[in-house]
Image 1 (cartoon, one colour):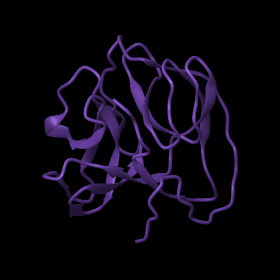
Image 2 (image 1 turned 120 degrees about the horizontal axis):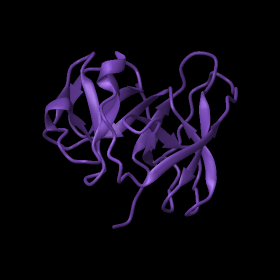
Image 3 (image 1 turned 90 degrees about the horizontal axis):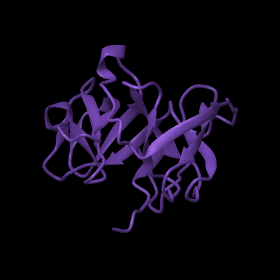
Length: 161
C-alpha cells in the first residue's frame, strides 16, 4: 500500500522539537510514526523528510498537525487522539484496539470530517499506553533544533485555519 503525507502543520512556541528516528521501513515526509521510548511506552512523531529503510532522519514530536481521519470520526477539544497504524488515520480513543494503535496527542480544534487538529504527545502521561513489542519503529539519539515560528506546510495540500 502506497503511503502519502497525511498532515498539515502549525508551528507552536518558538520553533520545533525534533529527534532522530531510525526507520525500520522507508518513511515518507509527513508520515506519522510510532517511536518506542521504553519497552512499554511509545510517542508519536511526524517525519520531516523522507527516511530510507534503516536510515536515520528527523521527526517532529511536539507541534500541532492536522491529521487525516476516517470520515465518520469527530473530536471535541481536549479529546484523546490515537493513530491507527493499519488504516493510516487518526481515531478516537475508544476505537484504538489494534496492537500498533498508539496515542498521538490531544485535539485542539473541535470538528468532524476528514481532518483533526492534534497537538502531538500532549496530555496526561497515563494517556501514553503500552507499546507493542512488534512495532516497526525505533528511536536513536534525540536532539533539539530551532526554527522560525512562522507557519509552514509539509504536505501536498495547503492549510488554513
